[in-house]
Length: 302
Ligand SMILES: C[S@@+](CC[C@H](N)C(=O)[O-])C[C@H]1O[C@@H](n2cnc3c(N)ncnc32)[C@H](O)[C@@H]1O
Image 1 (cartoon, rainbow, N blue to C red):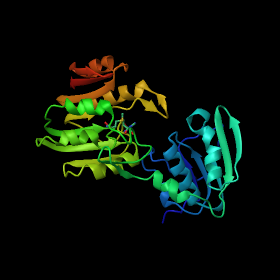
Image 2: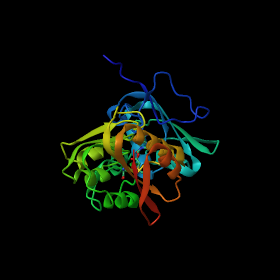
Image 3: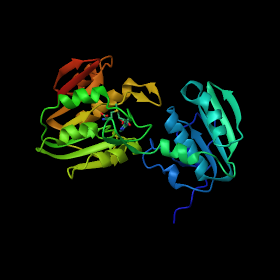
Image 4: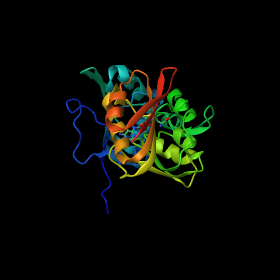
């Protein structure tokens, strides 16, 4: 039987700022295969590299305090301008006696889990998955564009031709593009992949279609796919809060790899992102379907 973890880490804090205890299990929803912090209990130590969104961050801190045993050690840190400056107050509001320090543009808060933390249920509820009334879709704070549909995705969905055969939605989020894809009866299978467990769980609820299957994975590696007829994507261009153009370019190469010759990629990107060269290098033909409101939609034929 697997041992019950006593220490956990959420995310990847800079090494020089936090020492990860030996045997700590990863609990970030952005690390495929990680444990869900909400299922753990009696931890003696928890390190949280806290996420930037306020609802998401307070949900993680509350889940962390609930998972710790009374007296268990919490170290929470974040860049000062990405929620770090609010960490101390947020932990104090949960009843923690916080020892706060500043290093390398981060705020680092150490606390022992109080016997009876305050306000955990409220923070857990505010950060929980829910049906968002304005979109009619399941989502959760922290997920990409969690409470509004991204205008780039709307543009791509509106310009997809009726698709056919087997395809994939790389970086599927909560399943917005999948809805548009599966509207075509000639689609036989759609693999949805996202690196965010919360997004995949929401997509499962939003996309009720036997042709869809769902994977919590790094789409650049998993699941093994080949010979697809089409790929759709609104590729990520941020990693850990920083613009990373290489990520979108890697998604383009991955799409080319998993398509059959003649298979088609439909992708949307912010107008400023330089994807044309990568598309032309990986595909036989590329054309811009539409440029509108700061976004561009590409069709690329493998
Ligand atoms: C710009 S969003 C698009 C989401 C969704 N397709 C939509 O249109 O609303 C990019 C998505 O890619 C996911 N993502 C980022 N890196 C990834 C990776 N390496 N593998 C799989 N998904 C990834 C993010 O979690 C995010 O949901």
